[in-house]
Length: 73
Image (cartoon, rainbow, N blue to C red; front, side, top):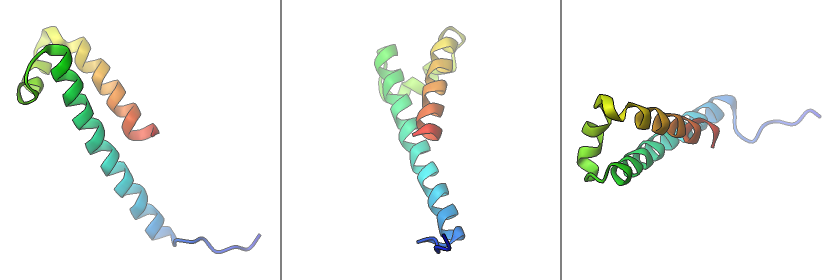
């Protein structure tokens, strides 16, 4: 039961932060692609469309999905 970890604790924490950062970037890109498809707008205009009040529910849904992807995957 006295086993040493393969990576020390600082390396494990750095790995955790790195993976979290990668997941945040991937999920944000995924959110942009889905928003562009749902709103039938180019990818570069999707962010501007999501901040409009009539698209608030879509923005909330996409933020929920993005958070799930980033933190639970």
